[in-house]
Image (cartoon, rainbow, N blue to C red; front, top):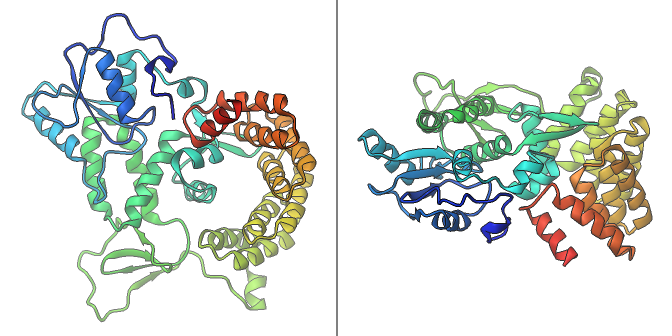
Length: 408
């Protein structure tokens, strides 16, 4: 979280208040600051911050961390009121958070220094798991902007959008309603076209058995999915639901094992891990590594599953195999360092983290983890260097708060 003091923003506010006479309201979650901080900036720039939208409101700012949609999928009350006032000819402007920041002549520090984020950083900023981010990437819901030695970097807004759509899907909101809401939002803010594309991907489902009942698509786990292809008329209650086989569940017979490819076993392991069926996931990953023992990604995912199954020494062994097969496997070196740190092999953890930094000096979370290890080793000046380096990449997440506390 950035400081409550506007002076710590990476800018110099213009001498003439740019919002003089403006009445500004906010909707949706802001990516750059809290609503309180934004309202303080409005007041500093000569404007009046408003809690609600009314005829006197001249600007409505739409946050970019979470689209302004309620839990039922409908647009926020503020956005709907602003749209109605706009349609009546009232002089109200609806602008994105980025457009508002540009108008203010300011830009948060983290957006200047690091516009792309690793999965671990997104976990802290958006309160999602690395497994969720990997699953969304495999499903095509999000796409890495770049990869550095297998390490993906994503746009913050894209992942935040995916998270919000998945939350709405999990709560049972139908796709038609979300689509209509996003289309209304798109008519006001053209850059909202991307969530519509993500919604189509989400409608297809990412993995597992999926069937259609009279309410739409549902996984065998009970998870509701968006459905764009609902039948024209609902099936009678006594009819069996249509089964849509995507990938069969884990087969147990020798014949099935021989029939599946190593890639099939790998994807099955990923699916089972997502369902938290870690024991079965481990067996699937083992079969993948038996079929292709030189694939470092298979060993890496097996290590991840072993760690989740509370088998750290088995995980360490597989991480070692992954980096032996691919010395540049950044995430494997990082995870190896984290697990070694947990079992109090601080020297081994330091060595693993240092190899990762030698490969990629701008790897944010490795600076964070290495700083923690160095502190435990009593090397506080060296740790401070890495706490500071981490803050070059992240100014507002929970890890940034920890880094500042350690420096203090």
